[in-house]
Length: 191
Image (cartoon, rainbow, N blue to C red; front, side):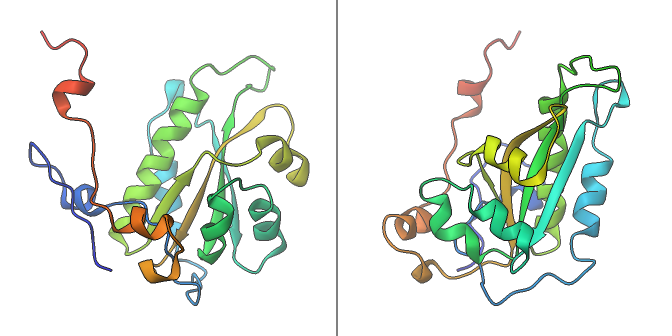
């Protein structure tokens, strides 16, 4: 399967029109040691409130003990397809500062870091798929996370596989065209 280009109402970067979130990953692909370095460098340089950089990541390559721990927390359809990815990454927000005070914008800032990571990874030929279907409490227990770290999402990273490797209805979703709300539907006020 080739790229699924977005149909946009205004010009945007080609990396963004080509980026999408597959479920079919090449289960024979292994990430070289430095393959993720640029993606995490992009996350590192994303903006954050007061430059707090409240993002942390658990990176687990397929075949590792950490990968198995993360995979065991996935829910529903995610547990069926995500194991074929080259890596699973838990996206963590640092929700308390060193003084134990809440960092109210931590999850927002983590989202920006993950977005930067996703775009950079795509520009290097890797595909990323974000998942909210996982058990955050089990992640916390499995990795001994303190209450200052909150598992917000899990993502797969790897090379694109073939839709035929997926069972229905996942195969149908994989082949469906990309869709989004129109720009006018997402802007509440535009004076």
